[in-house]
Length: 551
Image: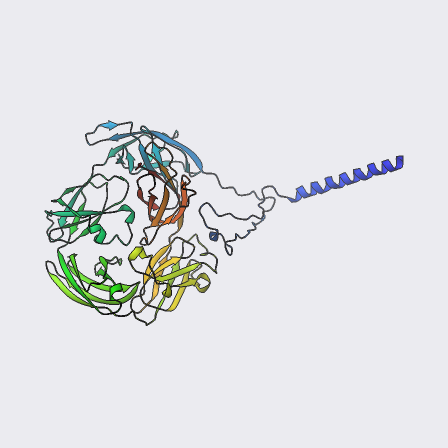
């Protein structure tokens, strides 16, 4: 019996020694800090197709294993700054106001990096805890932007950037902006016009098909006389919303101006006006035709005026600037006919536009898709690419012909000068204007083939950056009932996208990605008045505060 017990004890000791030896050897083989095989995760708001893979699946990336003597490279973390201070606002009588509330916009420059921030101001105090700065930057510069305090627009004084001291305290002085006075003058003589008519484009329609060189039919109904120039404009109810005004004077054509609220005395020059009587002939597509009038002086393709013909045979287009135009008839993007005409100041010119069936002749359409530098691929080769659809100006280009739609997938494109430039081609398409969507990305533009097609089209896609929009009420409390919409203004705004909510509630802030450049941001008015902003989205932090008024 003693021999059996002794044998069991010896076997247990041997087994323990073996386990200890294996554990020691396994630790010697592992290098502290060595990266292992990882599965990348797309950053917030980034789609899975931004990471190489197929059908939205993320590819596993094996990192190079360094030798034991190599120290793992660690990115130095960004430093968090505790910024804050007081704000004093000066009115037109040079009286200082030290207890106003609202919000402050500022840009923080740290070395090579920049970040845009907007924060709530309470009782003349501001604080921006946690603003990120570059780790190696010795000096941070703060540049205050246009702000809203006491419900009015204010600008910093002086306008120069300010150095941030070690304690992060920056006291700011701002000045309220007076409402602008608009000067409406004749371009040929420079004189102030005696009888001025005005109407204002809804801010949310900026960059849309309604934003032409003259007001559309519905907006014209709101035009009203405001007396002689200069015209004292009323304070905008939404101080930071973009303001587009249309104005005309007696004997002068409509003109468009984007008001710069920082300019106290903006000027709009108007051209002498003439009239065009356009007689439209032809069947059977005539009643569905959309008539566009494009000025020879307009290089960006913006229509000066467009109107659906309907049952009419004659259109009288008034208040047109004198000059040369092309009158085009289209139906869902198909060209039905065109004519060149010259409008003379103070006269009515008559022209006959022959409208026929859309051409059945096919033309080539091809060009280059130019991607941002940070993109290696458009995405999965089977689903990513370009979608084309013949379209017209109605519904901001949302109406298009299904029968003439087609796609060019990534697998059908040919790389030129690396993966960023991709050659695409559709050898035989119907001539007309096409809406083009980059599949799986919120990017839309348009291309016109012209009568003979084109082989030199360029679709240049700006890079993506993240935007964070926070909604607060007039007391600075969080608001979660208003969804955020956004639309790029370059190229032209053909549609809007919206942040998703749940049961009428939205995260705060709402985060999403948009293409770099001017971007229209707006709330989907629910319990509060609609707010609209234009943000020039760029690399780095893009933070926005919507300061909302209850309905």
